[in-house]
Image: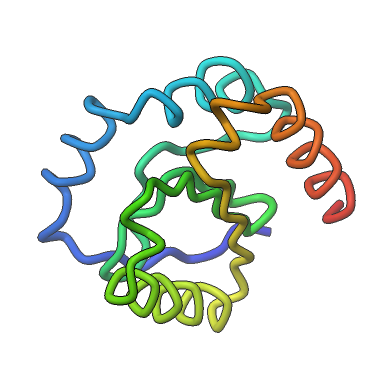
Length: 120
């Protein structure tokens, strides 16, 4: 069953920009793992007032690829608020650090694969 996604129409251009300008780690996850995954994934998907890195409607799952700024206090508070909103709407959030994608891409893929299999 599909989840009804409400989004802020004002962030459409920003989502488009982010899709065209993914980070190196986002591109790696997208092109080498999610793009041809058995479930359909969306890049830079608008949900509420937020834009998430990757979203699978069938699984109600968001994958966030986090750079260093996500460990600063202000950004951590914003991320917690966003995760709470997503969770309250039945969407699980998985966070992966950029350096994990860089250092252990195969391990990240295995971790994601196991998490996804456990959701089915």
